[in-house]
Amino acid sequence: MMKSVAIIGGGPAGLMAAEHLAGKGHAVTVYDAMPTVGRKFLLAGKSGLNITHAEDYARFVTRYGAANDRLRPVLDLTTPEAILVWAAGLGTETFVGSSGRVFPKVMKASPLLRAWLKRLEGMGVTILTRHRWTGFDGKTLLFETPEGQKHVTANATLLALGGASWPKLGSDAAWVPVLEAEGVDVTPLRPANCGFDCDFSESFDTRFSGQPIKSVKATSGAGTTQGEFVISKGGVEGSLIYAHSAALRDALNRDGHAALTLDLTPGRTEEKLVADLARQDRKASFSTRLKKAANLDGAKIALLREVNPDANQLNAVGLASLIKALPLLVRRARPIAEAISTAGGVALDAIDERFMLTSRPGTFVAGEMLDWEAPTGGYLLTACFATGIAAASGIDRWLETPRA
Image (cartoon, rainbow, N blue to C red):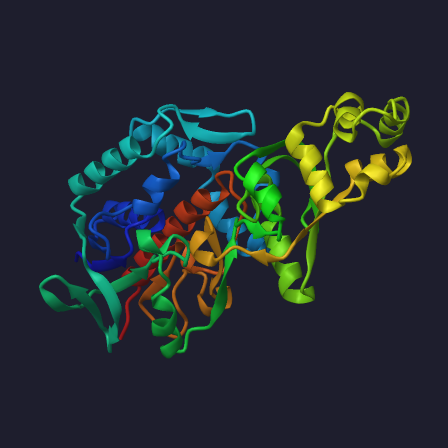
């Protein structure tokens, strides 16, 4: 007999679960508080939807930090290759960028989402927007709608409401007190893949805000990576910063301070840099000497002087050491509403192997609501897809299990 499933949240995890469950013959309804589904998905795709990553799979599955072991079986069933096959089935051709990130050739999310919603409609999935879930009344789901409060019962429920980043698009974490009232263990939500304040001077902010710092290596507790970042108003942001954001955030929370060590000339050894600096005419300006000896541009030179105002007093050895290991102090993580994603959420030990809440049988959780995090680069979206499918599989098994 056909069973009813209510999926609350129309993002990647919820929609992927809907597709899987409808394919199993269940009657699926997706509820979303916003006027349309997939809003965060669409915004993420404005500059090119980073759908997954093409790096070696053995490396790929290590990108989820403390959740690696729990997510590995899930990712094994929904690999990056499987996601590309799925996208191709929706008419989305992809390509691998120079960084290994995988994008649709059209470099936007809207065609993929339109094709996906059309497929779901053809599979009989019902999507109800402007339905804000407000909690439970026993086994009944409560929604606020333009027509007033609605009561819904279903054979199983999947919560896929996202985290707390970009709340204007629907991920506002209003679910946290609701689940905590149900006895669900929720790890405090924190910003992930976020920028940081650095307390830069007003003159530096005015002149360099918005400018990129290219071709640098950054080292933190997360290791060493190469890339680029952007000077933002009062701080730093961008892909290289995001790769280290979890380590920096946790250091701030633990120690009250954190630093990112920058190598401004990753292609040069310190010894070569010392020799090149020593050859420069001391009568030349500091900027001229750095440009000629180290090939530093204006933004890098300004950042170096902002971090160490006495840099121009250093000899060649001291200056080379500073260029190769510039200690950029970060003071605060940017607010969670500005972050790309969220750390924290429903504790992984609060769900069983089917992704069902142990304290509330028949209610499952997927996507960014769960306590895991990953860097940008396709890892976030892949895990949202994968946990959506895993939860859907768990729902299917639970619905097929006879109960007294």
